Image 1 (tube, rainbow, N blue to C red):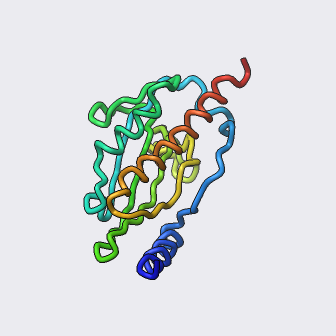
Image 2 (cartoon, one colour; image 1 turned 90 degrees about the vertical axis):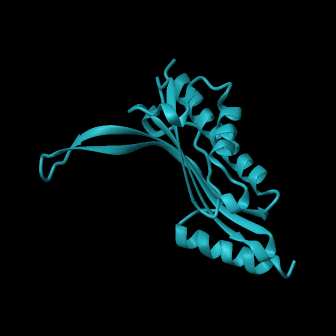
Length: 174
């Protein structure tokens, strides 16, 4: 236990630097029901830090998303088929502690859409990412061997929260 304490303290420090909350509360509905009518999300995965040293791969992340979203009322398009539609974004930052056989990851799952906007100040048209849902963020730590399964469970939990918000938005006003 004494060996793990420095890693946990360091992990908490990293979370505060990253601005990562340890957990998020899910809202039943999004503000303005912005998920209403969406039938598909493109999957985008970004991994930073020492993800491979902790057994994390894009295939693991993709499979974690698809295993939970299989019964959702919307489809997930694999990363290779990206276009301009709504995006389900998964970002993982990981630190490995080889001497302790320990890993710490910050996992973020959110949904956004690209929109054309006209800036009030310059009247220029730009393309911007607009958040549709951003209630999936947290930090987890585990032994290296257990870390892929632990992170996959975190991703699954956040995707389930998105599905709940999507279901709520698409039942509202019916």
